[in-house]
Amino acid sequence: MMLLFRMSLHEAAVAVASIKLGLGTIKEISIDPQDGGCIEAAMSWEEEHTEERLTAVLVATLSGRAAEETIIGSTRASSGGTGLSDLARATAIAFDME
Image 1 (spheres, rainbow, N blue to C red):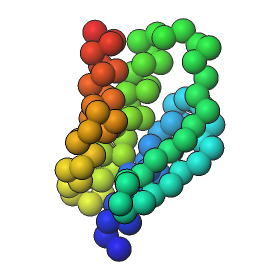
Image 2 (cartoon, one colour):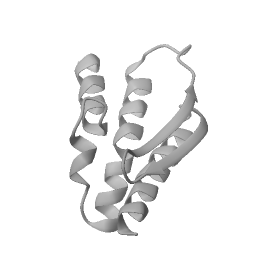
Image 3 (cartoon, rainbow, N blue to C red):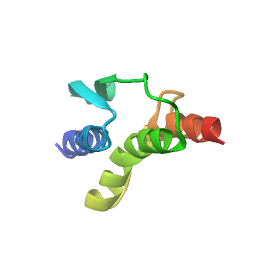
Image 4 (cartoon, rainbow, N blue to C red):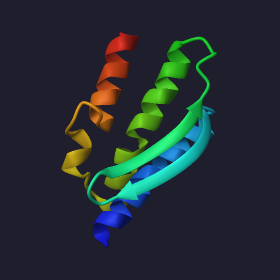
């Protein structure tokens, strides 16, 4: 149950941050103990890739980990694993911004 709570918290935080930051419309949120969580969003990339826009994407990308750390007191190690992980995506965004 703790794993499902953690995954739900993580994905909900990403969804809330994405909506609050105006990054698009959430189409689907899913959690799967075997495969992890996922959010499918319809993001508008018609806007310029300004520093503010990319920073908002970076914040939304890391918001799930921030929610875990704040509410549970730790983050799940697997959210930093593959090239599709939050940390890998955030690193790529930050690198591109630089």
